[in-house]
Length: 97
Image (cartoon, rainbow, N blue to C red; front, side):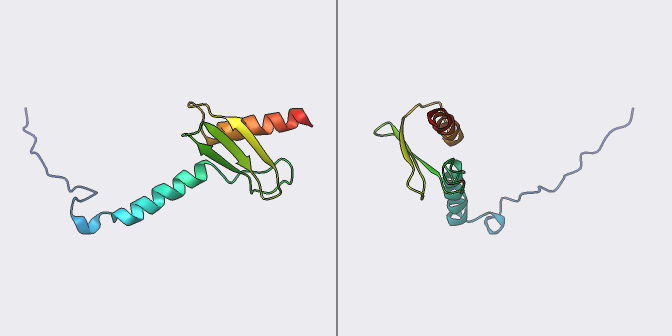
């Protein structure tokens, strides 16, 4: 039997503070990602990518708003994400036409 020597491998993400992402940049990335979750989506009325989904968890209301003037109120469902609300909105809009 041969004995294997333990070799120390350098860590790819050092814990040194100068190599870490500053907190203000991480917060900006998180807020941008959160904004993209709820829009912009393609509006079924005007066809432009200007539809936004606004979720108010406190009042349990969801609003889909577009710059063309289209606005719809929906009920808040805790299990839904922004895309789920958009799909529900698009289906309701197509049924209404």
